[in-house]
Image (cartoon, rainbow, N blue to C red):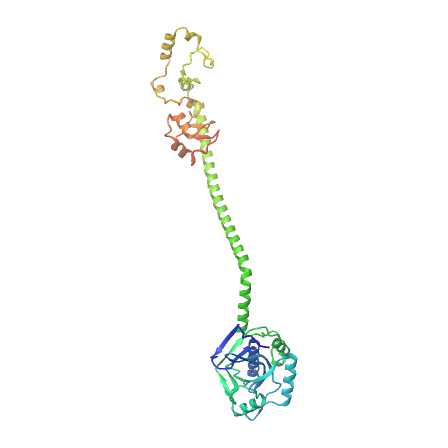
Length: 391
């Protein structure tokens, strides 16, 4: 079956040579595990058979290595590598069990202190074991983790400058690695994937979740921002209400003190002072009280005695007019005797600050002074029965 060129790849080295070699990430991880095992055991080499397939394309041949089977034993005969029949037998059994359709197309060697270049004996062994073109031989240093890839072409092992590591689901290699953990010295607590592969897979998972998490995250952020804004507004409102309550309490205390002072002054004053003020009828005309006689209010009816002689009434009215000081009181200030005479004005129905100023002072020029005296910021916010200190 023709294989598609992998899209998720990591380039290692110069890949301009042909054929192109693609090594699956689990296989690359397995090579690193063999390096660690070899470094712990000493100078003895370790090897593995490569499982994969070779395909041809328009731009050249492609080699896909998606499996690796550890050699049962890689012997040394002098300075030469030797693969016995027992090792081949175990390799074929493992390949059939875990890689049913796989083909063994090369081998891997990790050898402490060995040069990363096959000698004549290694080339001879490769040609004997893997005679097909484009079969692969890999050498790796267990300490430095340096590696070299060689391909069988032109009747020799030619070094390839670079290769690709690709990432895809590989259950065959994963199952083989799980079954061979004890043999390779890898315990369940240890990771199977190398760090680069893990980072790559984590990045892929984050990108797949990004679309699903973006909208809920945005909604949560907006809800949190609204909640913070509501809390700030409530805090400011509570502070303003507290300041306003303190201002109202101070105003009420001032009004209470002023009323008490006015009451003391009224009870301790001379009753004759009040008698000096002329009584005011509903028509606004001042009337002088006659000693010994009882005044009557007939709702605007004329006194019978005064109707006999109009001229006499006029003379009497002229004679009973208030003195010059009282005649200088401004128009509209007559009701000040009953409301505001003690320095405190009780708001009546229909009153505004302008009306109160006209009642008390005869003009509207004292509105601001009344507001300042009573701590009023809005002149429209007065109510019937409210006590206002008069400046």
